[in-house]
Length: 336
Image (cartoon, rainbow, N blue to C red):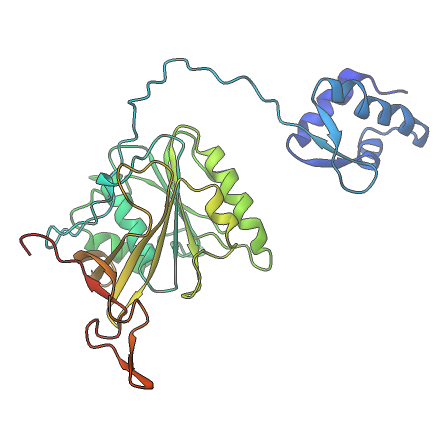
């Protein structure tokens, strides 16, 4: 029995945004091989005219099922509306990055935090969670937060307890935010219109998919905000997944070691800056066993060694004393 156009359209809803092969359609709709010609006519003809399908550009027989895109409307959106968002600060000494003064965070934004292992990226995003809990419905997902029996890991619980300034727990001792043990398919667990944090994204042996995963996370967040954490190499400007991981980000932050006992935060990209932001850097200490920040101050490249940590001396080189071989120095401001 021949498939009707309506039946085919209904079936193709299972593949929106995906590629599907004509042989798959024949098999799953229990059609005879002789139906392939009519099926191809529908896919290339009427359904393409209705912007439902098109040839995918892959080998013959593959078709892309298009998204059902609606015209954008203004509705009740106001240009002055911004997302109520606060970046981390040092609660032990009142030091601050001051990132709120440099950029605007809006509903639907994606913030990417890419950092070298053990450089402080998890401490940074847990502090982000602590700063914004109570303002929004919050969700944190990760693969290092729960045991196999579904209970929170003691070391993660200890870290939350050390952040005494944050309202992580209710009167019953349970969490004031949703905590999910997720290590894959991150976009499928994003809570729409909420504040979502993914710590951290890993797709072993398929790092090229991280960029598209970030795009899916951003779309799934709706009117909320998503923060995604990536691992990165110390000599790289981007997290694993490369330059495409920056394409979908509204804010791209990088965290690297600074000297032997501190970390360095660098702004890589800001889509909506209030003033000069890209390239600015801060050094900071992580205290209380990874729970809190202190001594946050803005830094710049050393004017003697220009970030190398070594300076020319005669025909050779020597450690740069001006920056203590870090390659960076504190920015001196009026009144300091």
